[in-house]
Length: 157
Image: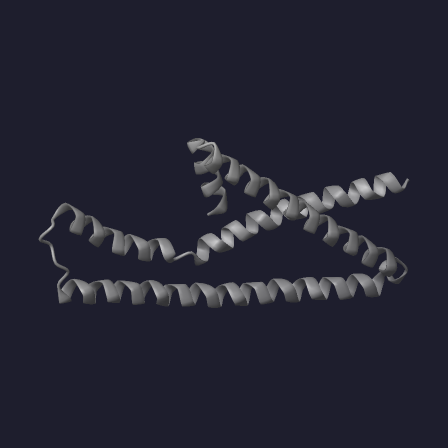
């Protein structure tokens, strides 16, 4: 009987971890702005590489500065929306937990224990995934496996 409880907790923890990775990826994608800023400077770097006599003039510097400010302003808005959305989600789950524990008072201890197990299992699963990724990354560098290296870089980003 206990085996099925642990198996159920493991399934819930694993699915929770996968969903949290997906949500984390989505939220990071929404708030990621460093690549846009890098692209602005890479464009100028390419011009400098291609034309040794090229100089960045004041107009170009001001244009880059305006673009960076625009990107940062957009990032601020995204971060504010992110915090509001996160607050609303947390508020919903807080309400859900209070209502659940109030209605099903006899399951409070079981719910707390299951939550603790789920938290520990999620932590272990996340730690394991991170450990595997780091070993694969090290192996890709040590044995110069380019495709594995590219996959690991893709996963890290």
